[in-house]
Length: 189
Image (tube, rainbow, N blue to C red; front, side, top):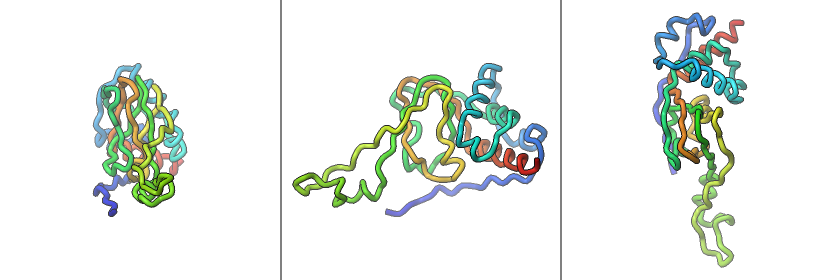
């Protein structure tokens, strides 16, 4: 089996200084108007994401710009928002309402190998690959999808709406641009 990767353009930041003061950054990002309540929710959810905070400390101004770049989307119950292994990882999601289940399938080598001990029945016949295992749930106020964007890697899990849900979506370009700018601003301080 051969891996294929989607060709992506790199996002490279050259402007340094405060994220809030960077006019070129504001011009390059696509903004959608938000109510004060929506903006506050998004900033709070962004600050709660441990992966983002570990990579680079995102300040209030950066969170507000990311929030401004988000758009709202309704997700019906049962819909897969992210599919494990998908190389087209273009969005980060913040859950406003509803919940999402996270599933991880066994490693491809083990699932594909019919002679693997985990795929053999007692009589020696092979069985179908094991079902993905539920490893977590993301509730309102949580977020998911950032790892594939941060590391330019295939999706690590499948994420499926447990109930009718509402998410805020941030695209790859705005997400990467903001993280790069926040990193430069930190290194200057």
